Amino acid sequence: MFYRGNQPLDDNAELTVSTYQIYLAEDDYTILSLESDLHLKNITDKNVQTTVTQTIMEGPLDGETGYLSFCFENCYTGNVNRTMSGIMQANSFSEGYHANFYVYEGKYNRIKVKYEVYLTNDISKTDKKTVTVTYLYDENALTPVNKPDFKPALNVFQEGSRVQFNYAFDSSVYQLEIYNLTGQKMAQHLLTSGAGTFTLSERLTKGIYLCVIKNKNQTIATQKFIVK
Image 1 (cartoon, rainbow, N blue to C red):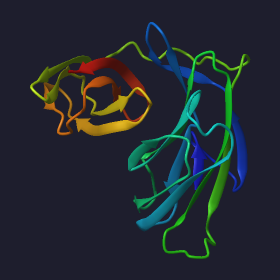
Image 2 (tube, one colour; image 1 turned 180 degrees about the vertical axis):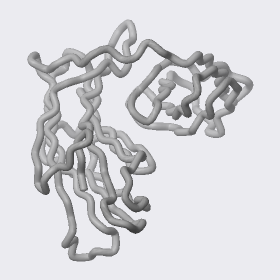
Image 3 (spheres, helix red, strand yellow; image 1 turned 135 degrees about the vertical axis):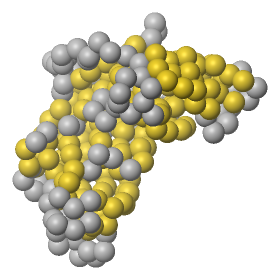
Image 4 (tube, rainbow, N blue to C red; image 1 turned 180 degrees about the horizontal axis):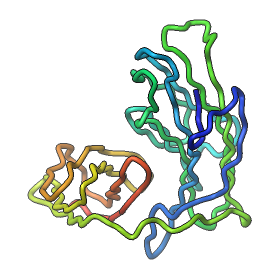
């Protein structure tokens, strides 16, 4: 079933999201995130192979003014239809599911997206659940409360062709994500709590990238870095 927060949603529910948070702020641009706050829960008493889909009903396809982010075990960005599958544990929420829309401040935008979930081996999709979200960023969009003050210490540096991260966190486990400036995710890794140095296994080409630190609920910190 789809939930929003802790509340289950009826099948074919429709909702509009206009509340945003600042995802990344630079001198020349600011990226905002409109969060669907959708969650997936397996309400059965057994593990199930699950398929989820993202289908764009209306809205921009070029990504010039905004782009979707869709996660189920793995995360993908871009204004395209997607289908992903994975195992959901019995009687539990999927921590790997997330859906939102990134927009550029001042570039008002609207996109309508249908999300579906069903059992992978259910060819007729008799137990399919659907929710439709309209992400609406306009002059009436709302700014949410500020994020928590805590930010992990993070230093990005380059050794030869390898990119490394010195970090110091609290007791939580964080996720490191690397994006290029078009919003394409280039890498994703878990960083354990405490302090340490992490070497990125992926080899990035020369250019400017965004480093994003997340916990399971939200983005905690962002940092731009250059690969030479």
